Length: 92
Image: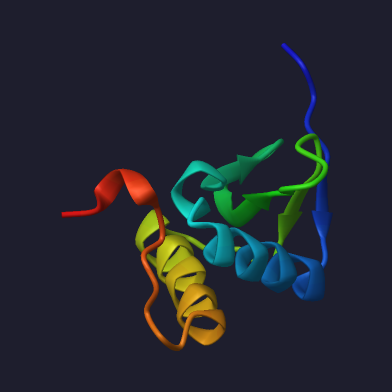
């Protein structure tokens, strides 16, 4: 099993979400993961668009998936005020 490093950087987390929103690729790059050794602590993360090996969190931990995904949703809302589509696969 490979180890993934997560960089806790709110500014980069928000920047990555803004880039992904503008490209319509958000859903392919977000996730909620548990921390090694602390399975009850969840992180909201986004994979870097330019450097796919980098993952960024907003620096906060969550006790439920619902709250972690809500934090991702709130960050997306802040950078996507016009509510542009988040992924071209879900167009109707």
